[in-house]
Amino acid sequence: MNEDQAVNALSALAHTQRLRVFRALVVTGPAGLTPSVLADQLEVARNTLSFHLKELAHAGLVTVEQQGRNLIYRADFAQMNGLLGYMTEHCCQGSACEVSDSDSCASC
Image (cartoon, rainbow, N blue to C red; front, side):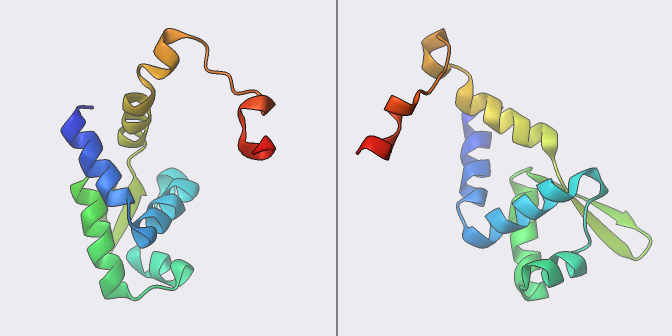
């Protein structure tokens, strides 16, 4: 993944409704969901959902497949993992990334 792709993906996820849609598709796994099931599950209008699915697809975070009369949307796990890999590629400058309790804000 390159910087432009990461920015597009993060931009697409920087909206509450799109993040909810993407998370629902991640939870569902490879089976995917139809827009009508997603709309019912998330209690969102279908036309609004269509706009958000289009944005997620444009960012490469979801794929769409036509099955008969239905569209099936799925999270693109390779793209998601690519984004996570890009974000953590040089994590902790190569050192082990361990967070201890003292590093948390619980003591703040």
